[in-house]
Image 1: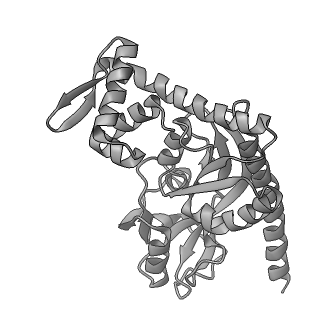
Image 2: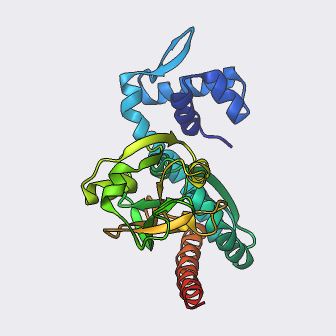
Length: 304
């Protein structure tokens, strides 16, 4: 059953009692009654209401983070009650990058569900790390795969160092070089993956002290790979994304080796459910074994 606190948080996000009612399966009048009841409980108006919808008052904005914490605590309590009854059940909600979902999640999910068949898993994929961090911080997700370090304070389990490479068309004149020249980072046309903040790719250019000649900006990794494959420019990708890429690409090391560190973030280990802890532990052991397999496969390929 939806609590009035969850309804408050959703109404604050949507700015509409009608939309909140539709998403939660209530009538608009039911949500309006819930919010009036909550305002009476708090002794203050939480929403300003007009013909265009609702918006938080100053008191409502001040109380929002506290009520979000209450929602998170309620979900944690329900998970704990299930564990007390010796039911290894419940739901683990996971946020991830699309690349992580494609490369890692099938193996992780297979191993986890074999060991914990009664636990349900829910996934959401994002291109923007800020969305993952904000979702974990608000308690919408139990954990999230992120690039370290995060912008916010989390309980972090580091997973793997993921080297960054230059991706080129196989027929590019530099495709057979051992290293991509620093000068080429500035002179060759660059196809950028859109990122609203400072990214690991920006760090590459900073470390090499160059400014790229950006030709295109794209929203999707695979769209960028398609452009690179056609010889329209170069791009930067971590090994995780380039491994078994759907396009033929040359992978060239940078003059100054650069990597990103991937990890999994939680709001708190102590307050996490047993199911969430079990999932994170499965992630840690599976990724460690995967990294060893990848290194072995690449050494074998080099010998061949």
